[in-house]
Structure formats: C-alpha cells, structure tokens
Image (cartoon, rainbow, N blue to C red; front, side, top):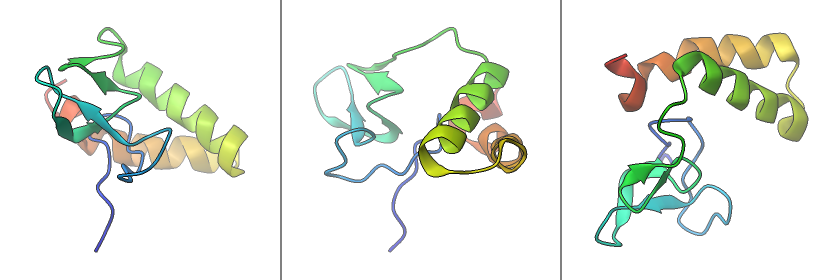
Length: 90
C-alpha cells in the first residue's frame, strides 16, 4: 500500500512520522489530506504561502535533507506540487 502524501507539500504522511505525520482538524481528529507541518487545528500553518514559495521551500528541503540536486528538486516540485489538492484551485 502506498503511503498517503500531504496534499500541500507532497511529503509522505507516515502515521508515526515525527516530522510529517498527519495534521489535525479543528476537532482534534487527524487530517486525511495534510501533514502536521502544513496543517494544524483545522487551518494551514502558513495560510499566505504561494505555490511558488512552497516549491522553493520543498525544493530546499529535498536538496539539504535528501541530497537531490537543485535542478532535480525544482523539476520534481514544479511537476508535482501544482497537482496537489491545495494548489489545484490556485
């Protein structure tokens, strides 16, 4: 079974992942769509971030934490992030 991905940043949302586990809804239940870095207590943690800023942020994490080249990280983010639920309406 494929791990659920955050519909804002694209991070895998492992149930026990300390960094990117599921965020929470206003009632305290786990979010089905967003990780805890992006969504808490029923709202986005950075509600004013633009798609372009999210692409830059995620690409930097991919380079610094996971060893992607800057070009590959940016290419993957440009291809994937605009297809996620949060950004489809932008």
